Image 1 (cartoon, rainbow, N blue to C red):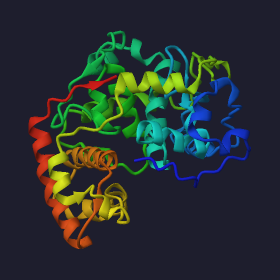
Image 2: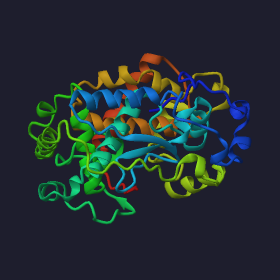
Image 3: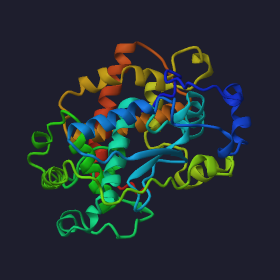
Image 4: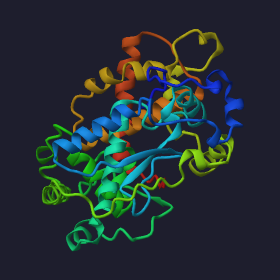
Length: 348
């Protein structure tokens, strides 16, 4: 999960850096004065370019700041959300939406590789190829308002949360491209017994065929550039909350309240959400039998639980080792249940 903790610095200073949230929310996007240049976003961007160069791929998607991650149709580039350009805005994002999508380097790279997949699809018109349509389906298929993924499906690769490859053929390709591009993934071994391997092999074959080639589509347009957006940040967050909601699933509440407490007398104790983030690697290692697709689902359930602990204001009570062990049991049980009973529809 992203941690907008200020470790990423911007070379620019802004008047609004020390403002309270309500003051920033009343600003218009175009008045922020943000630029991608000089922000920490140059680091994942440059890493993406290096990964593409190592593959001898000449298309380097251009990036610009906007409201969200997006690769518009017909453009071999993509936008990055404004809040990632400054640590103060990352804190605002966490306060408003409870997490910061792309707020650390590994997460940002997953998203950039994904968007680069869309950029390659646009730049080389990959979606027009017969074999693309045979393997992934038609990219012209309308996007649904929501989708119901199958956590146990092996027809799709795993990169972003929410089994995003299952949402649409274009997302399936972008997710497959992201897995293929990531260095040292050993995707042939990882997906050896999955039908999704055929998709990865197609992408491998396709990218080899365009090595050293310039894309026929070279547009440098930047639709919905931040400096052009005149609405307020408050309106933006209100719309996002109405569409996605800000809450995490509440069906873990009973279990979480057994492990942690919201009693005022424990106000000085460590927050449960911070405790779980701090021990995430240790807890994950303890559930050592979870591998592959199960680990992906485990991470999703873990993220939901952390978010819900934060919403409920839960605190740690008792021995740290005992709490960790009890949580390992809970997480294992709930992940298994999620795998076999999930009926959640995920909005796009």
